[in-house]
Amino acid sequence: MHKRRFISFRQIFALTGTVFFCIAAHGSGQADKAEQVFVTARTKIYLVRHAERDPGPDPPLNEKGRARAQSLKELLADSGITAIICPDWERNKQTAGPLADHLDLTIQVLPQDLRDDSSLLAEYFIEKILPAHMGENILFIGNMSTSRRGEEGNLYTLYRIFNKDSSPLARYNDFHIIVLEPNRDPVFFHAIYGAADD
Image 1: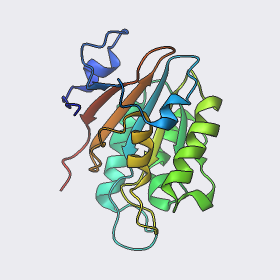
Image 2 (image 1 turned 180 degrees about the vertical axis):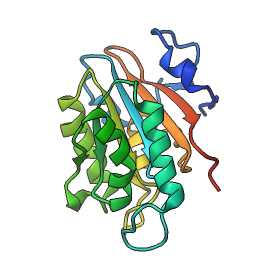
Image 3 (image 1 turned 60 degrees about the vertical axis):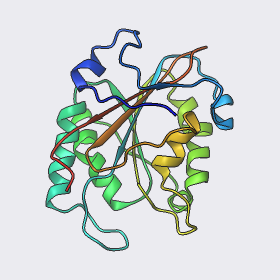
């Protein structure tokens, strides 16, 4: 069982290739999909849950959520993000909005038929999104539970492609980074950001 350690964003962004702050690395427990990922350049995948919203089928962010979206922008403004990806949910797109505007990036909204199918979404990410942005810093704004078929949310499914022996924390203030490098096992980092999650 992998152990998590909490680290600061100052430590994460100051990394120079060392794995001193490594939370987890793959050994024999790699997921089948991860074994099929051909990494040609150092790539960072940033994973975060959408910000707070009120109940409903597809509600916008509430006041806390809008404040968290601003916190996300401030956090990642200088992190070298080159692509922002999210499912076609209003809460995800609004979480991405402030950072996308600040970086002058177009949010890449995934096809709508993927938003209720976590497995298909993860497969699409690995087969289409990751190769297109290899060598970049990618932000994925996902969901804790979206599937109408009883599946786990897309954050869990995507994370477990690279680490099937562990699950990401998916509170509103949780933040994960997966670092991929050629011929090396993935490295995982976790931190928290913004206001405390009620």
